Figure (cartoon, rainbow, N blue to C red):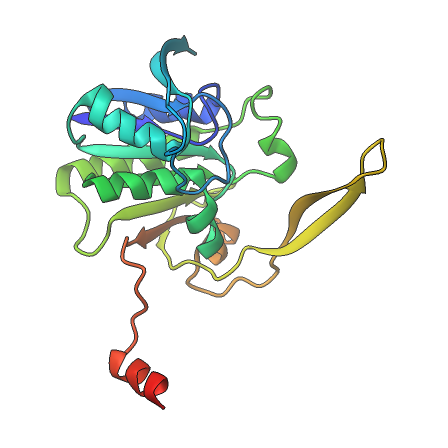
Length: 257
C-alpha cells in the first residue's frame, strides 16, 4: 500500500508527525507537505509561479517540503514523488477542528483531501479540536494526539480494506479534545463562526484589520459541531459534486416566470 500524507500546518507540525506514526505500519508512507504554515488557503493552487521541492529530515521523518499550498503538495506528491495514484491520501492531523461548510471551502487540510479525491484517490482529512490560543502554542508545547492517532489508524485501515462508500469522495474527521469513545456520522453545520473584524492602527497611524470570529452558540443535532461538543468523533462524508439537489424544472419555471 502507498499512502500520501500532507497537511496545511507545515513540516514542523506535531500533528504531521502524529499522522505519520498512525499510518506507518499500514504501508509505504510518503510525506509531502507545505514548507510553511498554509492554514486557510482552501484549495488554492500555484499557477502563476514555479514550485520548488526540498528533501528534508524533520522529527525523524524523511519528507518533501513544497514551496506552495497543500493542493500543490498533493499534486506534486502524486505525479512526481510517488509517480502513481496512492491507495490513500491523508491530510492532517490538523491543529484545530475543521467544522461546517466554512471549513470545507477555506481549510487547507480539507482542500488537500478534495484535490486528492479529484485526482482519483481515496482521501481522509483529519483534525484535532484545540482551544484557539493553544493552536499557536502547540508547536512548542506538546498536544495529546493519542486519540486522533487511534481514530485515524482504525479509519485508514477500514478505507484501505473496503474503500469508500458509493457517493463519498472524502471523509472529514474531527476528533474532540475530550472523546467519549464513540463515533457519529454527521452533516456539515451551516456556520461555525459569526464574523468579526478587529480594526487597529499601526505606529504610523495607518488602519489595518484582523478578521476574526465568535463561535456560534447553537449546534443543531446531527451536525459535526453538535457531535464534537457532545464528545463524539465527527465523520462527515463529503462529495466533490456541489450541485444543489433541486428539481431543475422548478429552476426553469423560476427563470422563465
